[in-house]
Image (cartoon, rainbow, N blue to C red; front, side):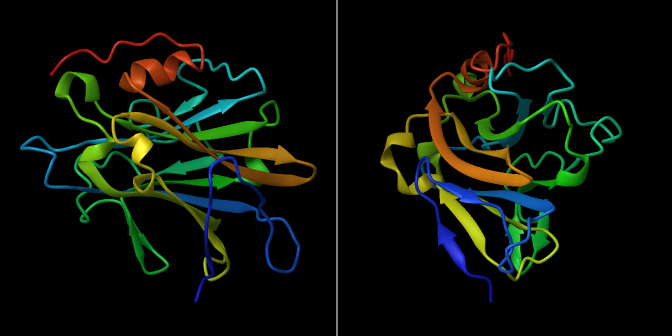
Length: 213
């Protein structure tokens, strides 16, 4: 059985196997369950990936991986994306190593863009401001990262729902995968935003307008 390690904010881990060799392919999965305070409207969580260097600036769309940019994936040979799960319904997503994930990335380090150093994984709620939704309306909002090729090894989990400070937020940087020596490290971030995708994207140098329902 996999060893599950619960991560704390700003914790950094070396992405290596138990034998000390570097992990080559990373599975990054997210989950959420709508709770009884959510009302009648479904909550549409989305996983977003921002490809950056230290300046944290992105070019749209080539440096962003999400439901709006990925398409058939041909422009992103280094990452696989689950596609959009609109409700957290377990009929979508993937069952991986005995656990269901609502949305996920699989990052291939050997083909990771050579001119980039970081891949920041974020969770947003689609049109959260317009729908008056926040993370307090979901339970079990977690992110898991592990070795895609050997998921029986260590899994690292970052649990958003355990921190009451996130209840009023509707966008969060969960963590970042970044180059370190000949391999990668992962840092749990937990940086939250009020204002949904619009405020999150500003921190990566972009101005967007989600529009209205």
